[in-house]
Length: 519
RNA sequence: GCUUCCUUAGCUCAGCCGGUUAGAGCAUCUGACUGUUAAUCAGAGGGUCCCUGGUUCGAGCCCAGGAGGGAGCGCCA
Image (tube, rainbow, N blue to C red; front, side, top):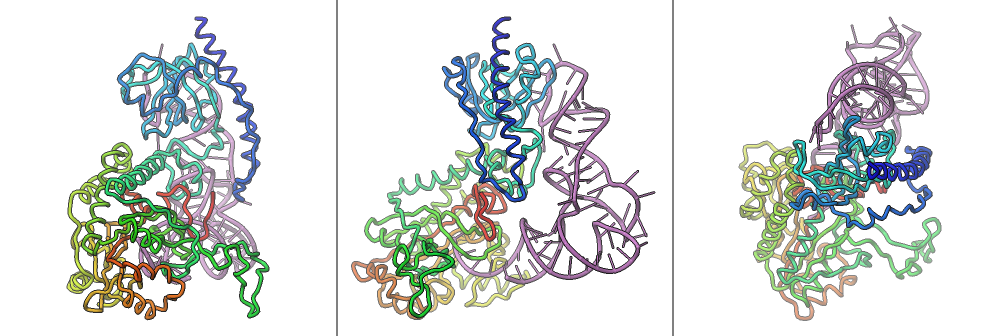
């Protein structure tokens, strides 16, 4: 068949072109010493090679579209990365994933059209374009497959050097190659779910009349009190200008004062809420704490709704409905990815997500929780005493053993909470609320805010918060103050819960934590 | 920052009481096989036993220091 010969020649031509480029890449990649992580080396770009017209004239279909298609026996074009190639000298099977779904599509290449040599570079990790006919599969295991008429290697992957293999790789090792881990089933699933949850956040708030407010990333106030901050400066690190008393002269800095990366958008969020009514923020947040746990990041994304006229009860209602809506959205829209994670990592995942989505959270006060913990038969490493903050083991007991569902704890002693929380009538506790999730711990921290100017400034004085730096914040209490409430949801902790992953460093593409800012 | 465990082939891991030339599975390469499903079967190549120093006739194994990683705790979201 001349058609078959033409096909073969086309493949050969592109194969030889691409393979010389791949060789150049391979050599450069090996020259790049992995121990020094010198990823900054720039490699020459391959010269542009136009795809043949019969391929260009076709619109690319995603794997997701093709797998769901009922419209068979038509010509299709798919582009993606090879997960596996197997077969014999008569027939070859090329397994392709393009990120549109966790599933792969199988392309079948008959040997008469594709001599072994032409498929040499079609290996694990290679980027390919495959043109062919979408047909019902002859084999078991998949409904449809592509009978390939053309296979083009867009970019080869040296099989000896490619770090991802057709087998399980530990999550710890994948953290070392985070630039490639999105190509794995696990991280594909996690990143698609992460996207779905981010989208669901905006959809929920938009549907409920909230406005998305962008609060500053660089902040001039160091009084937010949510943790150690990263300094932002353009001053010389070696020889900063000094004031007469020997301290660094920040009046010469870019902003004319000391500035930091934000640890919370809450204070600015409150300003917006006291005008727009219902607002939320959703942005990056930075904490320079030396936290080495599976639940903390130095750079994470936080969602902070703030609602004027809401009190503590309404704040809890919002938190509960919001969380349940997000979980339901993931269940409805990420079924394939969740099924994979349920199978591979956590057989209880789907059951737990349904349980959280369908059952009311347990609400109780800090004081009631202390009573339960004191009468618990379980031995705790740390004693429980009214007035001290609860330890992780105490929170876990309440959520995982005693109630076996999410818990909202309220009305903590004022001494262990932030200055802006509204004081209860007894003067001992504040209208704080922490939402505790199984396996995660604190997923939300929030409160009704102190709207009384005198009480607020009194608390600030007691806790050594400089009122002078926050006069802009206090103005909301001076002019037209009103009850209001809000909370902060750690986005990665939500993704952690929904995916069933166990380390927060595995639910953000490029995690930032002490001693690590790779990629 | 504290506690604790770990570091052996590209990956996952064995390695006995300190004793000859450090092993397995997978991956890679070669060959076989007419529809495979992480294909299968046969063969081959592949090692700075994390680094530095010490003890010993002899160290992957014991000791000290360092580096990196995991888990738990604290800080919190």
